[in-house]
Image 1: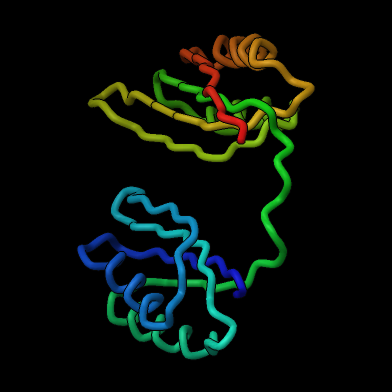
Image 2: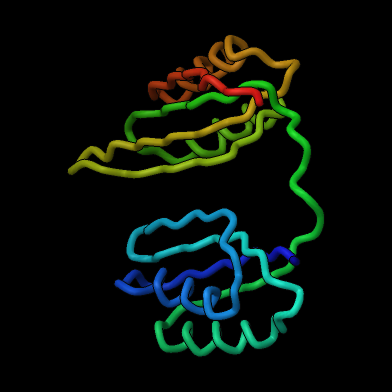
Amino acid sequence: MKRYVLFTIGEDKPGIVAAISGVLYQFNCNIEDSSMTILKNQFAIILIVAIPDNVDVENIKTKLTMVCERLGLYYMLREINGEPAEKRYHTHCLIKIFGEDKTGIVHKVSSFLASLNVNISDMRTKITGGDTKLYAMLIEAEIPENVSVEEIEKGLQKVAQELDVDITVDEIPTVHM
């Protein structure tokens, strides 16, 4: 089996997941990992797909092109090499940011985390509210062995003061098998 990443985006409407997964099912492909979300009115899909060696990828691309043209979607299918990277992180945490919306929140928080080699494995942001826009961000982060949750909390409190937002950090218990 070869592994591919499939990225699809387009205006949200019912049936997108069924259409894309239907093409993959037709060719006996396995969806190993997925992330799907609506951003404003755009529906985005990212899939890691295992494609059997006996399947011609060009046939999948032909079918995906037909489905995507019919639904007004853009897609990209790209082979990924190798096995998953070995785990370099010993701790996971959930970082929550809430405050008045302003430019630079994502950059300042992510730059601080990058300075400590903290890996962002998932991030969600939303803006809600009336005249005063409330900004909410949730980050799942993977922490390297040489960094403590307390160090992250202390540094993010400085970022929180600079941005005038509330930031909390909660360690996520992990199960080692």
